[in-house]
Length: 407
Image (cartoon, rainbow, N blue to C red; front, side):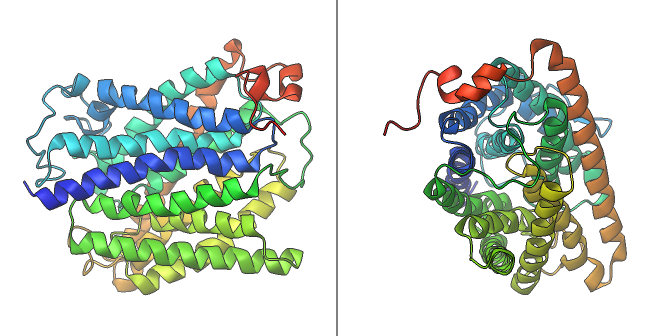
């Protein structure tokens, strides 16, 4: 084992953990002032729930002994046998316990991303059940398919360095399904702008996400190595390029360079570079950032102005379509020279990799959307949303009995 690798992975796990409350601030600043506490509370709830689910069964379902390429077994149930010795299938220079806790942070943040689609109206007890079931039935199988030894998409050669398909596509399309099933807010009007209650919260959340994302991507090298350095550099480059792209597009559309648009663009760039960060170089990451900026900005406009879906904080446009764009562009820009465990993409003589990426994307979209839709339909007898008078009052006081601001 290597002390430097272990220290880097533990630090990266802490950075990724910070991203979940950062999502709470990022989303919390965008909603109305009577729902800011509820959004941050929901992100912390998920941090608690999925931490326990992961220790009990989640880690085993993803990284346990493969069962038919579909799911891991329960040989690591309750972390049985997960200790200080490395699991050489995944990370041979760090304790398996360190690998486990690093991967836990990915499992935690994924359902936290989904809540942006149904903020201001979700029923709390239903959310608790949804998070546990979704993590077990949606996240864990997809993660095993892509990352688990023996997973069928892994065997096909799918490239997803840090979670473009596993985290962002699955969360984005789950959010779209949830927005459809749960329905619109009472005061929703198609094309309306967000009534952000606290723009500094949004900027703070975006800055913390950018900071934490270095652990998200560079930590996925699972070693303090040249590959981690590459992932760090391309992560920053893509985020910067996409932030500037969104700023320019918002400036052109509204005659003012929006701070919220710039922050959202940075997050979209981080989403898109996630699957590619261990396989592409700096110039490719710049291209990924610019292309993703255009795609996600247009997708947000499409959802807002043409689709009759109240995806409140545009999780589908930012994470779903940002993840799709990044996963597909990975199949174009990937270089085996950067990562010997990867493959070349289309531009480096391997068009088959692009087809593999498209297949993995389609499978993840269909599975996550379909199972989320079904899961919420099955939970609907419990009540998916709060009563109209609670929605009018705001979830901060109606559900939690706490106000975000006392002015």
